[in-house]
Amino acid sequence: MQQLTFPNGDKMPAFGLGTWKSKPGEVYTALRDAIKIGYRHIDCAAIYLNEAEIGNALSDTFKEGLVKREDLWITSKLWSNAHKQEQVLPALKKTLSDLQLDYLDLYLVHWPIAFKADILAPRTGSDYITLEEISIIETWRGMEAALELGLVKHIGVSNFSVKKLQALYAEAKHKPELNQVELHPLLQQNTLFDFCKQHNIHLTAYSPLGSKDRHPSLKAADEPSLFENPVIVSIAALHKCTTAQVLIQWAIQRGTAVIPKSINPTRLKENFDAQVVTLTDSDMKEIAALDRHYRFLNGENWTTNGSPYTLANLWDE
Ligand code: NDP
Ligand code: 1BO
Image (cartoon, rainbow, N blue to C red; front, side):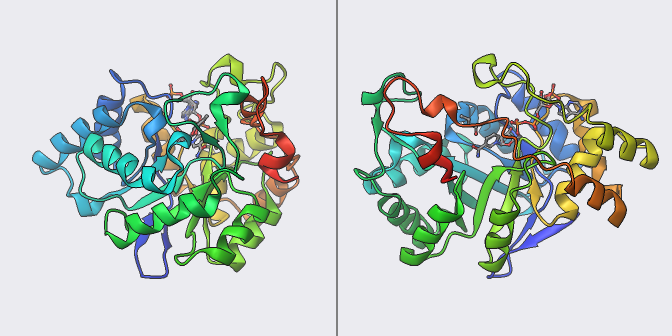
């Protein structure tokens, strides 16, 4: 299994399991199936509202001796309603308690967007807090405190642009070690990719298969299908593998981590087996040419009804 190495020598498996939209009632079995198949990297978040069930699955798995805690890489994310410095540790402790863990391998600031404490999903402009009111560096001080307390081994961000990473990098005592962003052949983010490489910031590719199961309110009517893209289909046919496997292996061969979500045992195995596919230089070149800066999660949901956030100040492009 390919791994990404952190400056202190810790290694994160490049392939992992996404858990957004994996409902309580299905994620317990999916997680245990995944671990039995060989998954060793699990991507969680407080806002997925399934960490307690994931915690039960982890606890049972450890009790049965299927794997040990230190065999797994577990990531979680700080939700946007806990961006004040003093809110970070309580939010992290809730996640640790739900996951039944003593520490996380990686904790990320989920979005560079802040809400009021009692808001899970903002509806109007007054539910938001601007980044002038709570700066990213204030949130980061809370993340640094978590690191110094040993509650998390690594800290990073998610959905951060080059501009936001540069600003954070300049002021951070402990530099962000990873940025989790949407990455797939239609959104390759080469400028961000190069910046992260130059600054020793790993990238994790989210929504690598196009996130088809997200809520219709988060979907464009005419969104493209990665699975039906003719280039991906023809490369899959050449390698006698599936289009999902091409998409996953493309991310790994590009040097990023990748966290496809599934709750289906056959697809969990199919996705895991992507790691034995080897794409040629010519396949990688053909896929490189597919880039069209298309976001499945375009962030519009954060910009409506009087929100202070816009697509321009979210993505800085
Ligand atoms: P994905 O691109 O992983 O797609 C998931 C969808 O693909 C589901 O409908 C799943 O269905 C289906 N699927 C999985 N495997 C296959 C396969 N082999 N063939 C066909 N269909 C398949 O979407 P996500 O948006 O869930 O992204 C992955 C993970 O990234 C998330 O779960 C989350 O952990 C993380 N993420 C992080 C974000 C952030 O802001 N930091 C934002 C979005 C995602 P089924 O389950 O039925 O198999
Ligand atoms: C709003 C989407 C969050 C997924 O990580």
